[in-house]
Amino acid sequence: MKEPIGREIAIDDGGVVALGPRMRAARESSLIELLETLGELNAWVGVIASVATSSRIQVVLPLVQHDLCHLCDQINLQSAAPLSRQHLARIDGAISRLVPDGIAIEEDLLPPGGPLPTAFAHLAWTVCKRARRQLASVLSLHGSRGASGSGAIADDVALIYLQRLGILLRIIGDIESR
Picture 1 (tube, helix red, strand yellow):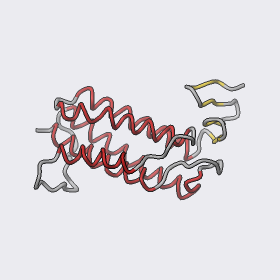
Picture 2 (cartoon, one colour):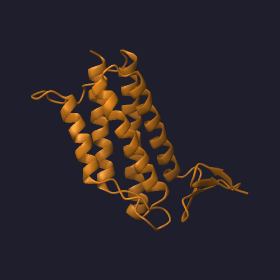
Picture 3 (tube, one colour):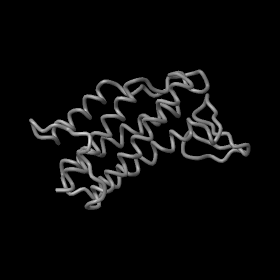
Picture 4 (tube, helix red, strand yellow):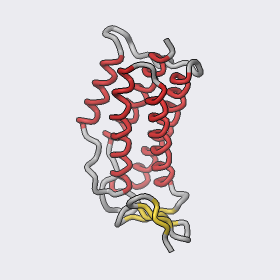
């Protein structure tokens, strides 16, 4: 007997998760782990949005949450359009608006700890890095066709998006630490 979870996901008694109408995956599979990590990342982005003191940040993060939901739909349902260059342009625009001209984005920009928004941004950054590694792993195992062989999971745009999101989270942490 399947228990419905959300709109399109169901778990049967044998530990198999139905993702959308055409795909099934073991509960412990890398695909399910990726979806759970993206959900965790989205939750942390929501936490940052709720505690951020900068209105510039509060405007950007709901768009990021929407993009992460879009990526999960792309993986779950395999019928959603993949993340596009427009998604990349939007996150690049957010980065440009938050970083003043002439300021280099350094690798060690975000120190751990500090005020709550900074600490949460650091935590979200680490989850984002994990999601990117997991997506790369799923793509290397299954390609862009997914575990079932049908529908596109993601392409390099999703990997680039997660890399840029990591940069954005580090910038947000830096802004909120001031």
